[in-house]
Length: 292
Ligand SMILES: Nc1nc2c(ncn2[C@@H]2O[C@H](COP(=O)(O)OP(=O)(O)O)[C@@H](O)[C@H]2O)c(=O)[nH]1
Ligand SMILES: [Mg+2]
Image (cartoon, rainbow, N blue to C red; front, side, top):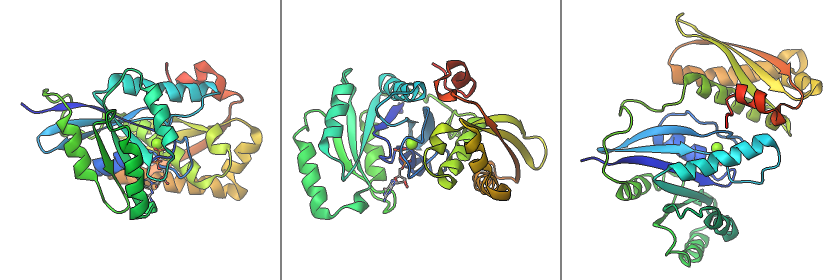
C-alpha cells in the first residue's frame, strides 16, 4: 500500500513557503515575492515522491490581522493546519526563535510538525549549527528539523523522505498525473498579482487584486481578459504609468509566466478599475475568490 496525505506549509510572511512549493513541484504555480504577505489564499501542489503522494498546501503567512482581507488570510493558514496530516513549519534560518514559539501557541490542536530552516545560504555554517542547537530545546515538540536552501538546492529529498515517514497508508487522493487542483484562472490571477508586486512599489500591491473576466482557451492563441482592482484613482494612474508603460510591463511579465505554464502563446488584455474599500467589503472579497 502507498502513502498519501496533506502537508500544510506554515510560517511567517516571506519565510519561503511559496518558493518551496514551486521548487518541489518543479513547476511555477504559486506567487513568490520579496515583499511580505503576497500570498492571499491556500493553494496546493500534488507531488509524487517515489510511489507516495504528498499534497502540499501553500498558505498566507502567519501575521497580525487587522483588515478583513488579512483576517481571511490568517484564517486560511489556520484552516490549513486544521485540515492537514502534518505541518511543515518554515523559518528562515536567521529568524528569532520567538516566531516558532508563537507558532507552538497557535498550533494548539497539537498537529505534528517538521521544522524547515529555510534560506540557509544566507547564514554561516557556524550560525546554522547554533540555530539548530536553539531549536533543539524543543525537540520533544517537532518530528524533525531540516536545513534547506532553494538557491543552493539543499534539503529537498530529505524533506520529502521525512514527510512520507509520517504519512499514513492511503490510496492516492488525486490523479498522480495532475500538478494541482487549482483552476487555471486562479493561477493566472496569481501571476498577474505577482507582476504587480514586482513592478509597483509601496502599498499599491497590497491594495490591489485581480479579477479574471474571461479566458478563451479554444483559439491557438489563448485570450485572457483581466481587470486589476485598486483602491484609489491615483493608484490607477500609477498602475497604468506614463503612456501606459507600467501596465505594459505588468502585462508582459504576467503573460510570459502564463505562456510558460500553458505552453502556448497568450494574448493578455489588462484593464484597471477603482473599487474603494474592497479589502473590507465581504461581498466583493468573495467575488475575488476569498470566500469564508
Ligand atoms: N536566498 C534565498 N532566498 C529564498 C529562498 N527561498 C525563498 N527565498 C526568497 O524569499 C522571498 C520570499 O519567498 P516566498 O516564497 O514568496 O515566501 P512566502 O511568503 O513564505 O511564500 C522571495 O524573494 C524568495 O525568492 C532560499 O532558499 N534562499
Ligand atoms: Mg507565499
